[in-house]
Image (cartoon, rainbow, N blue to C red; front, side, top):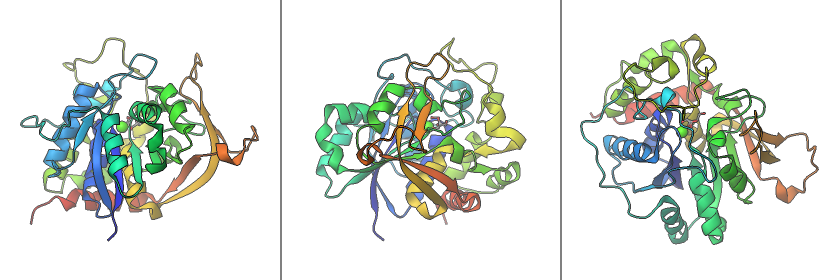
Length: 336
Ligand code: RIB
Ligand code: CA
């Protein structure tokens, strides 16, 4: 089977970890590397979590490079209340492993991979796109080597945390603007769609019957994901948190949305999704109430030239198919 070369940029966090379960089990993905960024938690934590998760999944062969510790032009706003102080509430690793960690920063590693690849590489971003912005700013000559960017986030008219902004954009809207205007084809798996990519309470219970390292990881984090699970002894940030009541929409009726897993699923099983576009897209960077709002010009109000329309909107998901893919991926690691 022909494998698609990809690099995955993560802010591991609970759903990033579950996305890596799908990515590392996918027979049609050639994961050239994983890069880490500050987002859900600090970059030291997202890096530690990513190294440990890849090792747990038997994919310690995948190089990891650490990236930005903060957004381009604003303080980091984390989401420890959702993912836990460590970023992976509900699962503790026996030890921390660092053997796959590269010396160079994420953007230098990305550049090396892009320049040495004989074919274009897809960049999959599951967190704020700070690393991608630095890569494109420092090394614009690599843009022709990028097949496309696949991103978890943006939204047409919904938000988390907040009525209109999505976390991965809100943390670093300046970076998002640079990347979405870079001319590289940009495929967003937006919150409008990832909210339809959920597991019901009953479907989550099925995970408890599974065995293997991925099952143990998911059994831990899936049932600890969300503001409702903040434990008294967690040392969450003082004031750096964007503490909102997003728990309601993301988990109403006991369901859990698979934001990052559905984005990786779009890479490995695009037949489960439909795509609209291309559109012109920009982002609010200064709004007192709307910073991080993605303006997706579906109705062409701005009459932009076609060469300014690089934004594709993944607008539907086969939820049952995604659930089955997630289950298959978890079982992939079961020995015997
Ligand atoms: O809004 C959900 C997104 O923000 C996911 O990528 C989650 O991991 C957080 O980064
Ligand atoms: Ca993420």
